[in-house]
Figure 1 (tube, rainbow, N blue to C red):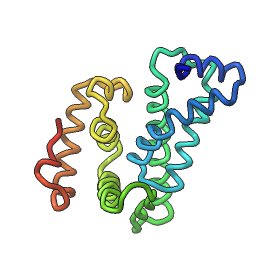
Figure 2 (figure 1 turned 90 degrees about the horizontal axis):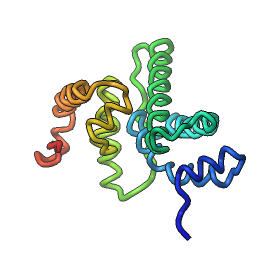
Figure 3 (figure 1 turned 60 degrees about the vertical axis):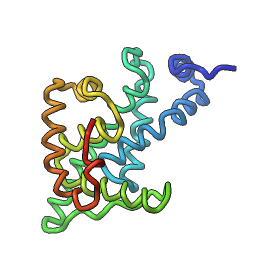
Figure 4 (figure 1 turned 30 degrees about the vertical axis):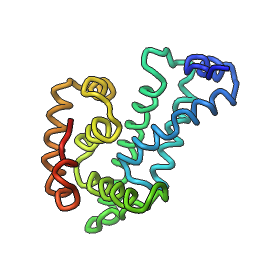
Length: 188
C-alpha cells in the first residue's frame, strides 16, 4: 500500500483525523528539528520551538492552500518561530545578564562522538553571527536549499541570499578555520 501524500494527510487532518496529523509530524520532525537546532542550538528552547511549529501547522490547517509543500510551509514556520525565540533570548540576556554570554547549547546525544562534537562546534559558532546571516547559512548549507528556495522561504531577493551567504561565510571562516580542512570550507 503506497504511503499517503501530504495533501491527503492534510485533508484528513482537517477532518479531525489525529493519526493523519501525527503522520505529518513524524514525516517532518527531523526537518523541523534540523532547522530549529541550526538556528538556536540544541536544548529545551529548540524543543519548544519545534513543538510550536507543529502547533502552528495544526492551527493553520484550514488556511493551508497547498501552494507550497508541507515541508516548505513548516520550514517557514520554524524559521519564524526560531527568530522570535532568538529575539526573546537576546532581549532577556540584555535585560537580566548584560555582561554575561548565552550558555552553550546542550548536546542532543545523537550520532557518533566526533560528528556530534563537530556539529555542536558549528552550532556554537553560528550563534556568533547575526540571525539574518545565520538563517541563510542554515537553509543554504546545512539544509541544502537552493538559492531560489532560500529566497522564497525568507521572502527576499536571490541576490540578497547570495550576499548574506557571502558575508556570513566571511565571518565564519576565521571562527571555523582552526577546526576544518580547506576542502570543508568550500561551498558549492
